[in-house]
Length: 450
Image 1 (cartoon, helix red, strand yellow):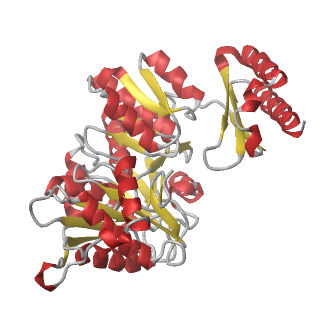
Image 2 (image 1 turned 90 degrees about the vertical axis):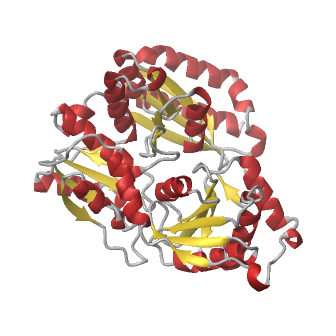
Image 3 (image 1 turned 45 degrees about the vertical axis):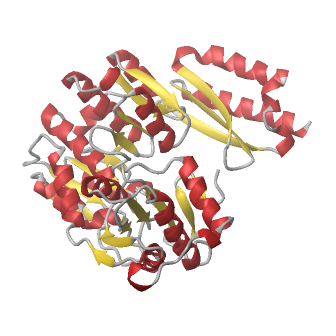
């Protein structure tokens, strides 16, 4: 893990942790590292979400970028995937998104994209970090007429909407949708997109005021949308997170349709159309067991990666697959986008709904979600790795694995970010599943205390 950049850019409490000075330095270092191959004047696109701190950090980033001779182009409030798309489509040298995604308002983050529209590989992030933390004196400032300019790209939202609409092969006329925009980036694009595709749209949490992003709304708080869809007779509901790179859905009865089910719906439709590359969907080890049963039944192969959208994307690029994602609703349609895109995922789901002539609950019924329970055990550093070798822990896990058989599974793993062992058990038999989870957890606790 990097010193500044975590698994998804630099992130922290805005202004006090992710400071203006740090944003300016990231702007400088990113401009120098990402544009060193350029033989023309470098140009960096900057998008932001709706949180109150985004304007302040944008100003600092622009100052940093221009101070080393690159131009900064402000896209305004746009979804994260819009930055990825526009950098690629318009030939920018690099892209920056200011957002802390699904986190609450006090946080913010800085995500960087290369000229190809992909998030940066670790090696490039490390080069940027070491410039900032170890050799700031190497960031030579420009003067006179060599400094960069700041300009505005005023049609960024519309160009992105036009692109996503062009990825959809269906007319949504006669479809009634509710959209929850988390008072975030989708507030400026989702209504225009789905109305352009022909749907009748009701908007929820699409009035950002700088302080209400992700607050009891969006894909992390589905209750409002679930109640609204059921009460108003909508055909479906879609919810985005703060920077609109995730999407979750709600069926016509107000029941949640999570990311696993959305990937199942997409993979099944793509297989029927002959567009599912290598007949494979990429998911993670935390994907519900019900997905693997669905895939087996439908003749779809599965590739399971570590938890994190970057690992899903790496697997897709490495092996040539074109759909994958996570239960959280971060889904990548690689034929159309280089990163997870909530509005694209939502529109693809409605495209399948319209073409199928079915109800959303019928589509979601493709996959049965198995009950799942997760418990945590706190550990000390000396326990890392060694608990796996304990005979009593092994015996209890083996015993329950046998009892659960094909209709359940046990996943015990160490957290990458906290001193915890996570014990997850899934199974069709909820009573046996819970018994297994609690017994295994107790055995690991006993080992830790010995």
